[in-house]
Length: 298
Image (cartoon, rainbow, N blue to C red):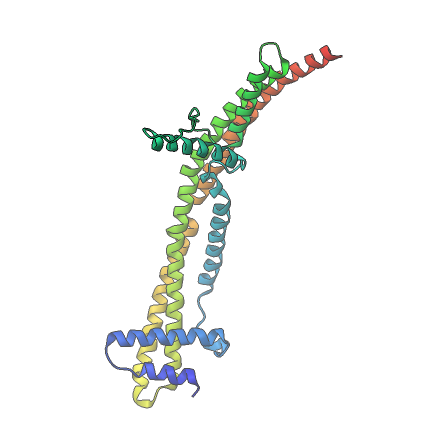
């Protein structure tokens, strides 16, 4: 008898109550799993699970991976500045303004010099559409949009991007509410429940195969008890496998994920359509200004 079997037999032989028996079974299952991993158990001594169960496992794994992969990417919609990294510079300017305001408050009533208090900067959404609208409007204001064609073009361009910026905010809100929330819920509830049911099946299967190993080594006086343990373990595995099959089928038949995906696509379509409409309109107007400017230049 090797070291594993000696240790396993010593725990199996303990008779100090139900908790000790449960601990012994858990230990024996761990030993069984380790021996299987090390290739010390012959393949024909490992209980074969139903093909239906194994097929469902494969499909649920694929479903889970699809959820994780898309969630990893679409979580960017939880961050306002996902398309505008230079917002860091704007944030620093806002922090400086806030810091100066705080210092001014602390030094009030003292002889310490009071820093100049710049006009508080209102919240500026840190998105690329908002930034394009702000920069274009700044340029239009500097050039003047009455007689200057570039100034007028920049003003029209800014107006278009203000509309796009508003659509962008609406898109992100819709994605967070109608896709990210439900998508994460499916992952953390129904899929997670199915995964836990599968873990219970694996634990039950290990307990059964451990009980079979114990039966093989049992002395004549312990044969009957060991056989009873195997029968109980077989019944437990059948029950847990049926439960897991039902839960996995429920997860795979659930229409919510495809409905959530539709909401994601819909939100993106509405945003892209709004952007296309705004840019199409302004592009025609800017093109007229460009043709007129080129004609005057020539």
